[in-house]
Amino acid sequence: MKVKKNDNVIVIAGNNNGKKGKVLKVFPKKNRIIVEGVNIRKRHTKPNQQYPNGGIIEKELPIDASNVMLVDPKTGKPTRVGSKVVLDEKTGKKKSVRIAKKSNEVLS
Image (tube, rainbow, N blue to C red; front, side):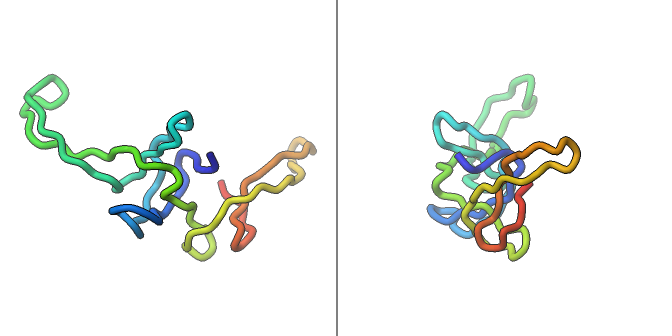
């Protein structure tokens, strides 16, 4: 899975096609992710300790990771993810970093 927590992604398929958001949680075994503001569903709840008044609560549900692409930090458009080996200045060791295929920018 090439998507990590706190990545900016854009939805490329499904009901939320075209929406952008930040990845809140990743479930690698199920290949699903939760994206901020995407796939929002309403849940009717009784009053409890967490919600003393109860009512209708909106929450984000997981979507499949194949339905999103990372946003290129330079252009703001969807891009594929690659990897590149670079030399770390502090330690002097080689390390692998993720890059955006369109602009070769390093992804955080």
